[in-house]
Image 1: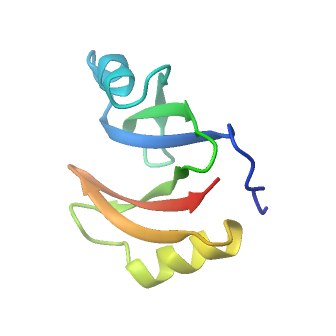
Image 2 (image 1 turned 90 degrees about the vertical axis):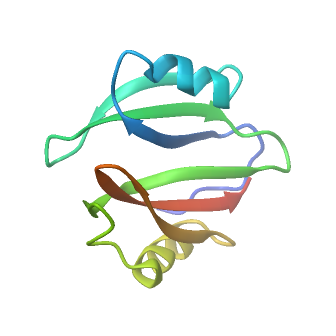
Length: 108
């Protein structure tokens, strides 16, 4: 599915393991952000922050957990998936211990 580049669309960012500070971290990073616990298919509890993308800004979405401790995610594959669903985007792997996610930044 291709997401439109419309100002104000919802973005999300994984902010590490889910814990009691999840909501505080989300609100500190993004005014008005809403945190929740996302549980991946492997059972990992992730602090995910939803926030509204400003007009003309960049949106970041997680394309999922792809591995553990820096393994299992290749930047080229992550970028290909990002570009196919978000034209003008850039995908990259990012490790937030203990897992590695594929993130996609794109204009909105």
